[in-house]
Length: 110
Length: 114
Image (cartoon, rainbow over all chains, first blue to last red; front, side):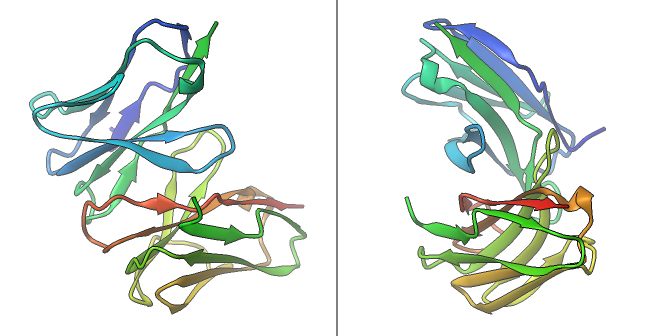
């Protein structure tokens, strides 16, 4: 089983709709969780950290489910500018370094 | 944002060439990293430096040779590469290594080996 698994997508989302996707991880020792965003041919950038109690940042909501070993990202009222690849990132799973998922591609269409 | 800058942004090199990628961070961070991103594959960690000392080498072939002269600069020296080494090479930095700090990436160097 891969350390971090993500549905590669693409998720085709009508503008204004809600989209949600998960990331599963195999190592229960993972301590910190993040969502990074990567635009086409650009570098990844931190979107938000994921806290145990769940957290929200504007239209973005992140959740952590330690029992089932997954994190999720929900995007409400999708904008065209939300089109990107969303990378699930864990820390603490393998030698105290960041482990990246392969990313979930989201395409928001008018 | 110009926290982490990489040069060159694009590089085409032959298999017998020697070239170098350069990275500079202006964030006062102690840790610097090289990652490789190939098409349809997750980011692969190549090297980690903490205060100029290499703390991790992820089984990277010797044709890739990192150099960290100080905590703000990181180089990746390239020699006799293979076509499968063509990828996006990302430099990154964080406040400390071995922590869950946010990692900041440079814009990357697109490498094509012909």
